[in-house]
Image (cartoon, rainbow, N blue to C red; front, side, top):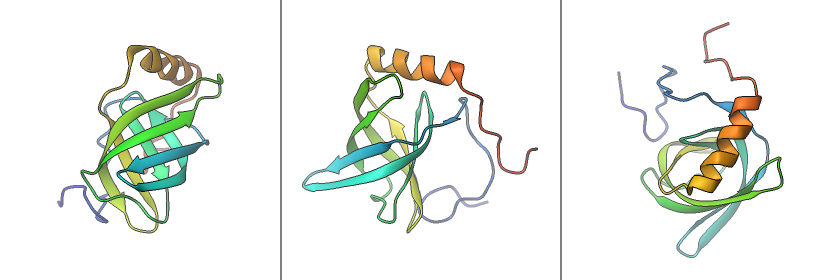
Length: 119
């Protein structure tokens, strides 16, 4: 089976952390390029971001997004996988403890998303 990377998501669930829905805008910046995209879901390890123009795999990004509590999260992330014209999965690389606590509180209170193929 091919590794998840650019455009070849296998459909196999490999998540280690609970993932929950979060639908907020996210500002993604790398160098001089800045995009406003839409968060689809969140875990303590990262985000799934819907975008027609995902950044390349392994690209380092600066992110800023609001949480429903009103707190804005600012952190760096790495593009773990992407599918052109669809989405990118990013992994947090320097999440501050205060930000992690806000995310963990939100995740604990929300229902988990079901893995594809599991009902």
